[in-house]
Length: 365
Image (cartoon, rainbow, N blue to C red):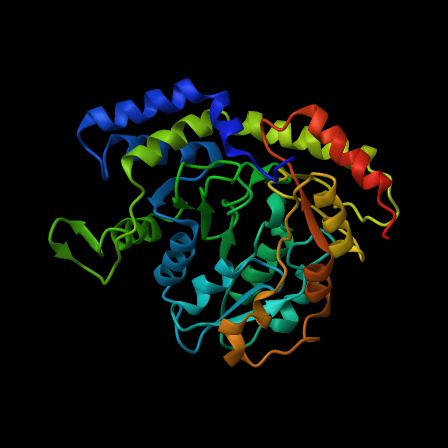
């Protein structure tokens, strides 16, 4: 069986470094808010080109804290893609704000040409998602935000190292939010995340919010939460960061093989934005015969996944928003047609060849 992802293969590539990092963190005797975290925050900020990095315990917490730091709440609206993962929307609704959905463009990211029509007097921010590892059109999005005096919060959960016109995702808006879930381009060995910003006031606020609202022990200046990236995960992430560009290059190599060697008219291949650098966290093809294709691949010993089978506006948890099927037809079509192929550092070339061969033999029957 060719598994969709085999994390042990990625671990084995750098096992000695991970084990040394774990021992170093354990032997330090300091397990929360220590030197490993400080060093990772500095290294990651330097990598993306931001002034500040705030490590937290998940990508969802990063989104929640970004919205809280910007003081967005009940009565406010945040524009978000209609075809994203639920976490992008949970970050908004956690504070009682209202998500306003916008359809994707041909690159699977929010369509800038549709954003202005969604702006109202209650709109406070735009939350673009760099879906599957490709940057949204941030030049256009930031121009709209500036015109309407809106915040920009970037969801970079899948786009570590992705570029738009030479600039890294996470550094265009007011705050960039990252997840380091184990399968991500930069993954920990557990849940963790981070925020990046160039704004010193926001950074100070976020540092306090993640630690009970406290900048000084037992002095709580705001109602915060416990969302701290622990020392051992920070140590693992320092190892992963050293190899992030290598991993991105390898996934791009696999993606180029898929793009050039898959020749089945029943399959629509993803497109890479001009002047961008797609890190292919997910290789998302589309097919009107998606369910048959997935069953066919599994019968041939190949696992695949769907990202994502139910768009947020149709999820049961958001019934109160009042949306129905047909309200966002492009996103709904993507949910019915998208299929993700295996793509990760450590995936052998021969398995890539088997996947390509199987797809090219698929006849939709």
